[in-house]
Image 1 (cartoon, rainbow over the protein chains, first blue to last red):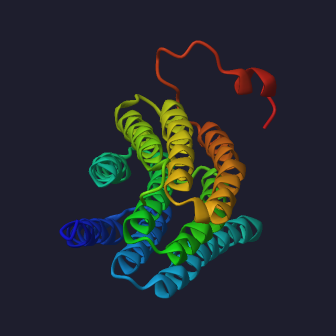
Image 2: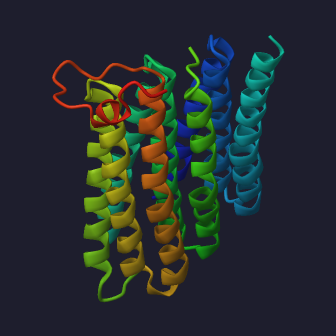
Length: 86
Length: 87
Length: 112
């Protein structure tokens, strides 16, 4: 049971690195934003495993929820107004 | 006995996590990646509940509550964006 | 974690984890986006609900928070699944060749 937390932390760290590489190398903007949200999700669970539930809650609300929402809202708005201008 | 069963459950959840992560990394269309994101969020909620069970601290459940409230907003906004035919 | 229902709760948690694993397996193995939505949302919802119910058996004092999480999941997961399926349809993803019926395309006709 004592080995479980470092193992889970290592797994989430690896998944974070994978998602961050995905966010760097993705061709489309939507996939990059999704991968960035995934990095936030894994960071939040990692904070939780490292016994910091308040930091994890802030990361969940701001990083994974609000940032993804804001990025997609602005992307959709840019696309709509671009269509209006052309 | 209970601890052993919980460790087996955690191993199964980790396997599901790896499979969903592979689908997110491979997914041919952007919609597949959004599905992978949604499933990874749900699996993370389960993982948070398992961590709370193992540690025995009820405060950890608040993080799962925040995810259950907020995760679908991102998925819905992403789906509305992809309806326009991105990629 | 030593209540009289601890073993029952642990077994329910294990059943939920098994459903989560099956959902992940279906998400990885299914041939097209619609079946992936089906496997990835329905099975994982059932798995998470079972894990939450088992946690309520293991820790009876937590049942209010667990019930809240369960309620929110039951409200939001079918919603996101339906929106995703509609987005996949409007993005023009072809279903797998074995698909027999496409009711949304039949309903829409030439609209949109």
